[in-house]
Amino acid sequence: MCYVVGVKIPKKQTIKISDQTIELDPIELPAQSGFSYAQWPVIFNEQQAQNNILRPGLMHWELIPNWVRNQKELNESRKKYTTLNIKSEGILQNKVAQALVHTNRCLVLASYFFEWQEMNKEKFPHCIQLKHRDLFYMAGVWNSWTDYTTGETKNSFGIITTEANAFMAKIHNVKKRMPTILNDELAAAWVTTSLNSNDIQTIASTHIDAKDMQAHTVSKNFLQASDPCQKVDYQIFTPQTLF
Image (cartoon, rainbow, N blue to C red; front, top):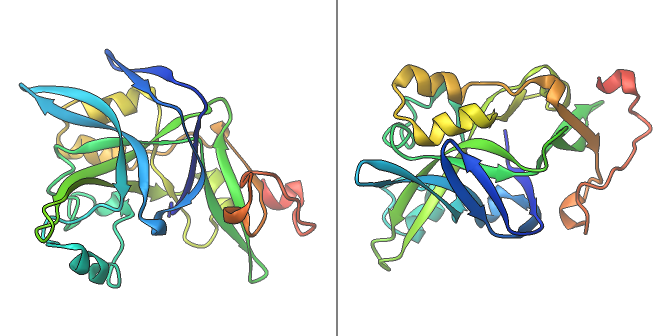
């Protein structure tokens, strides 16, 4: 799955998606758990006069269903299911995402994410990055939700996950999942193009090339570390063990 992510945008920068130019403000979130239900930077499509206008912004990480009426009901729903992640395999049937994925798709910004490898009944966290990119896109679905008790409206999102590629299957070696990471071409299609169900399913299930990924082990309490991605070696690992 994908429940802990980090992002570093040290200074204002401009990116281009399709023919649209987007300015990103500086932000640094070294490691954030989705279970903190906090804000995260995304790029989302906003319909204006039949055009898709891309906007950067912070959204609540957890795709909030429209049938949840207030914060109390939201807290109760978390005991039954999580919408931090949405599995690609069932996205067109998912009771929360199916009504949104045709219109409300977004790109979740990340510099790296974390997963655990299990060996000899012990778990070892890894920081996973792309080799030649400091910032990459994960496919997401978003929604605008209103708390009917307070009248507050917030935008929320969930990260789409897919089956692990060959690289991630060696790290996340129990559940064998990974976020759906999109290259520039697929990222542009995800947020700027009107997609049919087959296209949505194909892009949502895509795998970033394993050779473009790299990883290293980190401290078991990395969430409390000043540099959560700092490398920590465990004697149990050898290059042959991992890759």
